[in-house]
Length: 214
Ligand SMILES: C[S@@+](CC[C@H](N)C(=O)[O-])C[C@H]1O[C@@H](n2cnc3c(N)ncnc32)[C@H](O)[C@@H]1O
Image (tube, rainbow, N blue to C red; front, side, top):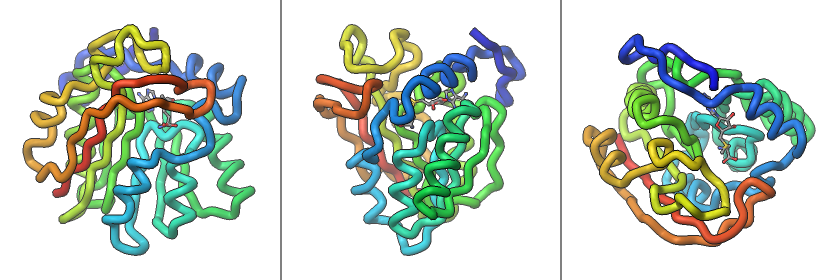
């Protein structure tokens, strides 16, 4: 596994390797399907027209493309060069103005107040790195901006519908409360749902859905 220097501690923390993700995405142009997360699209109803939306660890871009089609100004970040290129191609084909940047979130420092919403969907990483990225999400938020997160929670361990096999990489509700204590939580749910999102996410799953406002 590759190592990246985390900004918060200067220590080396493991992050997902680009080659692993590149191989995954290279073998399937819609590994997590083409449809956006229903939760994200519901949250988008709370955004003003033309809002600046930052999609983190956005992969092949199913959410970024849908949000752009709704008229938001979307920037997508991801570690995988392959996913970024696939997203650029799809955006071009659909004539959607999505800005795509290859970015390791372990080395990400956004401009303060530069986004009206920051979205992270199945952006799994080790707890220490996740805490650091959550702090950067808050930094990126404009006044009244939204954080939107959806991912597997710890109860997903042992299920075959997707997600990391290491509990440290999975969401805990208390971790989210702690990391976003500076924001107002508008929605925090822990549903068990049935995923049908490409080869990557299929079957019964334990997820967390989180929305908080600056
Ligand atoms: C499970 S996929 C989710 C993709 C997308 N959000 C979706 O739901 O379709 C996880 C994504 O995180 C990206 N990723 C993993 N580690 C990362 C890091 N350190 N910085 C940026 N992106 C990362 C991977 O390249 C991959 O696209």
